[in-house]
Amino acid sequence: MGNRFGRALLGWVSEGDLQPLYEGALVRAPEDLPAFRALWVAAQSRAGVLPPVQLGGVSAASDPPAALRNQVAAVQQSDMFRTHYEAFGGVLASVQLADLVTPQWWVGTEVAGESTRVLPAAGDEAALFAFCFSSGHIDRPVTAGNVAAVASRQRLLAPPSSLRLESLSRTKAKFSFELAVRPNYLLVAHVVEADRLVLANGVHRAVALLGARHDHAYCVLRHVSMGDLGSVINFSDPAFMKVARLLAPRPPLIRDFLDGDVSDEVAIADVVQFMRVVVQAEIGVLPTFND
Image (cartoon, rainbow, N blue to C red; front, side, top):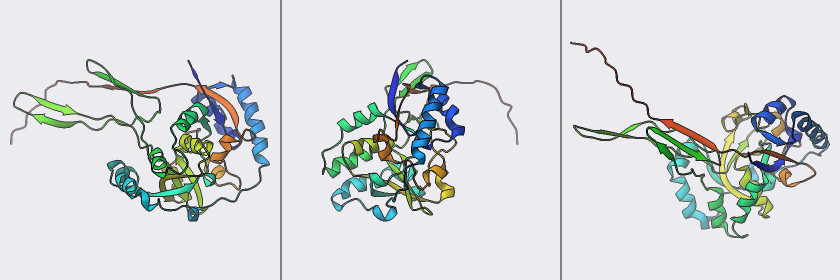
């Protein structure tokens, strides 16, 4: 099994999440849980003495420039935006990367490196916008009889759609369904009470942007209360830090992944997400009912 190498912000991981995180993320280096815990203890000590930071809140966000009106309109008119973002109050915005809090504990350096190689040059706002609103992809499905399997290295597979009737004749009915990737836009949650911007999706691209010396990114901005933050971040997953850590005077920041004095090198197993879909027919009999 191959490894993925990256940087971890263990200084903000809660102790109760340490073992579930080590096992669930398939950590390969450090090589065992005691070594991982020792790395965590050292990271907690370093994070504990970091001074508070003053972050720009929602007032530092802005609308995309008028020159991008066609790209903005294309996103706003898409089914993905209307269904998954606009329906929940999402709007398009530009945010400063230095202000973004990260709930995610780990970022793959090789993934960020790949993203950096496709980044536009500084000042190419159209290409930057496209980068921030790119979608994931799935590999070519493999079929065998009534079974289909599809994979995604980005782990963005969504459940299949419901069956629908495509065509009908006296001798044949044709059904179909769709497999698609989940939405993958950069998503920033503005926690209203704290006036804090939390990057809920897109950490690898955000780190890639910072590494390439970009200072801002385009995103979907959604206003949420502290109590509703769980609607955009799955806090039951140990890979995400707790709310109290995100709202602390010194929270984990996107830029911390690029700081060797704050983050630690951690390797996890290289895995690919897959979905197996089986079409299973069942023939039976039912009684008829007369009026």
